[in-house]
Image (tube, rainbow, N blue to C red; front, side):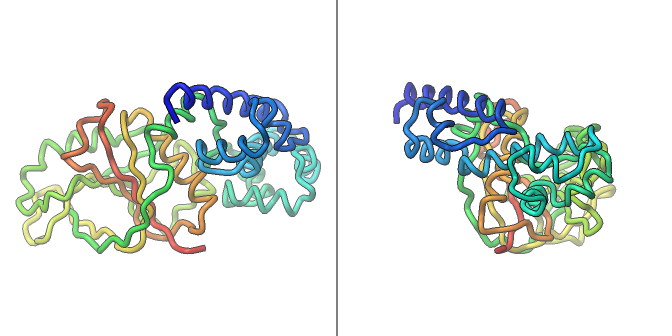
Length: 299
């Protein structure tokens, strides 16, 4: 498929997405959506899945759940009434779909009374479609990662107060003090926290991040640095390419689209990113590559 056709397809899928957005409370048969994108029904189904990594039906359900979550917080209407508004055949069906996105029931979401963070809620836009086409692997490699010893520094951060750039500045300034660097790349680790709950994740919630490198010998650790054992196991590995400014789109796809539609679920182990010095040229370089490791297990 040449670039002109690809660009045309992006624009046509965007038209379909806009039609979906404007009709989330109406019935949305696939043939009608396809017509808005000037595709035949079956060609549209194939193109949509290829370009977005999910089916039309899955995308529509996610967007209905996302939009309905606002109604749960901003109105006192019954959950059943909201479910019916968004074309769910029952409150039970709505609850099942809601829990897949937010990992919590609609009732508990309303009780928390806060707009929680959930990967993959955002609607598809031209920029997101182009990101999926060029900046993230649509299908990850499933690999077994051995346990690794890391040495580095850590901090507490949040989406609202991002301390990760500062963490890396501090670490890179002292990295040469680590004498047993195995040169397998730089690791940004989010350790598994048994008390952390994604269903309660907000922009102000703090979590731990490490900047580190792999070592064999942990007997000589520089002052102010610590050892972290990176848990081994099965991981889904995505490659993000380009500016780090767009990294959230890659996370949204990996966690919110691929994982939700795969035969896997999130496992209770560390997740991390790995930066290979031979492929990572800086946070703003268009050819930089980094790997996203998501711990998974079969559903």
